[in-house]
Length: 115
Image 1: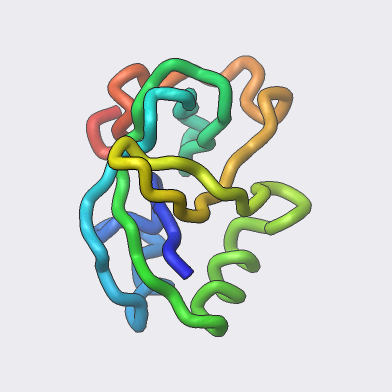
Image 2: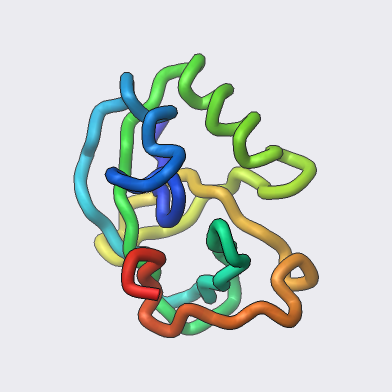
């Protein structure tokens, strides 16, 4: 399975070690249909915005996917869902609901690293 990561799972970020056995596919951007929010220690991606979000795609195995789901609290906090990248590829990522990000600032650049 291919996973799009955009925050603390990015290379060099705090939770990247969970992707130690994953195959890096490449850098990517979502289609411009999202909003990226700054929740302090981590970001939240919400569908329905107008921004393209910058991230990385990894190919993960079952145990890695299970570890990611546990970190992200899927399906009770983040929900793992399919999203379309700007090149038309469909991958999975972790999304939040709009009510979970209410009152938090949007990262207009679409880049967690550039916040």
